[in-house]
Length: 291
Image 1: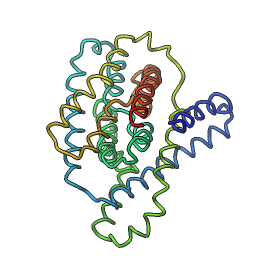
Image 2: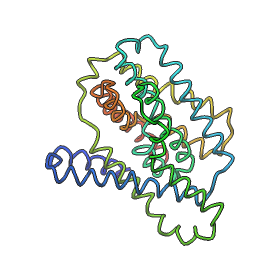
Image 3: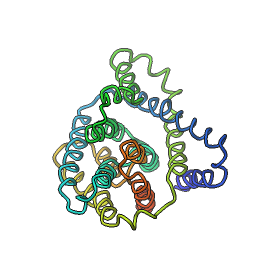
């Protein structure tokens, strides 16, 4: 737990002290690319090369898909989100898509030492986090190409190929891949700390929207996930992982999406910062309860 907060605090400290120097910012950017394009696919490769695709993956995928569908169906009807379209769309994406990788994975590794269920859930989320805003934004992009550019797709596909086609290779790769989990965990939490803007300005400007997002992330999301987990069977460990993900704050990637489509990125960034702090307080409680 101390390391989790320590690395996040270190990221914040670096950004707000020496982050203004171009060489430092470039180094952190390169480290972020290393995590996104190397470590994350390597972890996915390791997980699926080890276990392949199991029956529980179908349940996890259905839980994720139904949650996303319900979120968009309900959020589009909520009166507090019917104002200017830019704020509305930004609010909906930060309500729906949580921080699975840069906070969820580190927390789950600390709590359970396992992210098998989270890997499947996050794979689906990544795809729809690109697909849905693209459909709403209608910028004439080739969304299929954008999805194929997601590095985790190749980590997943490569792992499945090894598990079912060349299983004898995995025992040789396992020792090399084992450190990637901790590297991803602490590297991701450092990048999260470095990336999140320390601002609350726009929270007060768009207070009704912010409160709606907070309600969805910390009340509606866990209720929906808890209900779905009683419909679709999976091991208790996987259920626990999904429930932890359900209370994660908005993904930092949402602000990138909001900036691309002009959906009030200032608000999405402010909301992400505040809700991440709230989520971290909840995480402290989970870690203390988990011993």
